[in-house]
Image (cartoon, rainbow, N blue to C red; front, top):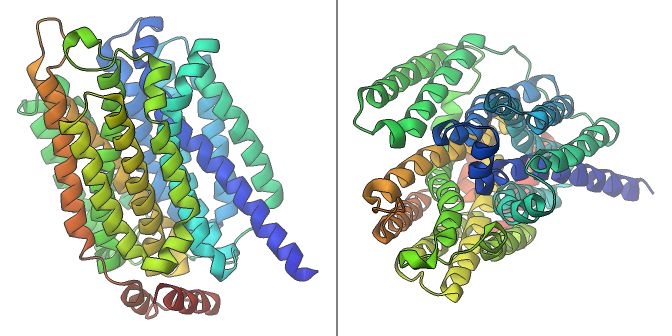
Length: 487
């Protein structure tokens, strides 16, 4: 009887976590296909409308690692509820917005919800039976990525039958349900990291992230060689160095630099950064390519709904890989899954670059990309969780997700510069711009493949974690089980 109650408890917890992650993930991309509609309805400029996305990424980049750390200190369940409440509040503000300023404010508040991902990983590690941890982490990681594709697929029908404000109301409903259920059903974790938040480190972390992402997001408009862009990037480097120095000397760092230097952590973070470049860029620019009128000599003249359907295989295969992530890790190992995912993703981008004239080619590329992203994201999340002690799960997985977001912001800015570098007389990008852009994404994923080769085996990563003083007996059991599973 006790055993069945325990199983019901972790399954209920898992359902709540999936609801919260789904709401956050959907809000990442639901607005992408309707930025022009928002620009028109709110009587603003294209550059201002772009901040509807940029503000969300900036906020998530700042709050994800900070709240992941706070969750490790004061309780993950408590911070999960706070995070979901912020996501709900931001959705209300954005849904009621009738000016671009209020819309951007709502998106900033929504970005706080980025912490739901590392908090979910930490809760899974603390509460799930050891044999279920890899599968749970893999599915949540896949769901976080699936939301990007699902948002683009769902945006068209929602806007066609309702209006763009419902892009915020629907996730709000999901978020409120998740927040209430989290408070009632998710048990508070017994794993805590005593200490306090280093607010100087938090300010410096926020500072270099904001300055960097503002610089790269405005680079396509201001020009990469402009004084403002170069100055912002230089300032970001200076503040970054100051942040690393403060964290390295702190007795209670916000982010443990020793942990970040661990081979299993920095290699996975590098791969996450490179994958972020590809994922965010393709989700931002593939719909634009598909919606280009056929009279331009390329494109499919698709509407919002049709362009979303082209990405449906990506969403489906990504989620399927997440469901199977535990079995895949047991069969070939998480490191091998990252390498295979990188190779498959590279092939997908190459198809988009050089074979994009027929619909079946786009569907093939979409399917392969879903497989590649699903394999890699689920496996990377598992490798990070396995490589650090329980007390650092939130901040380590938060930084991994954060670095992927930074890669996405930088990649989207670079992709925009490449695609728009040769505008035609009618204002549309030249076909060569998309070819070069997708080839650039393929090149970044080839680099990710090379970086993945340097990820240590799961056994080696766990051996490093075993030396951490905070490792608990339950974690040792998990690691032993994982070693047997991954061979």
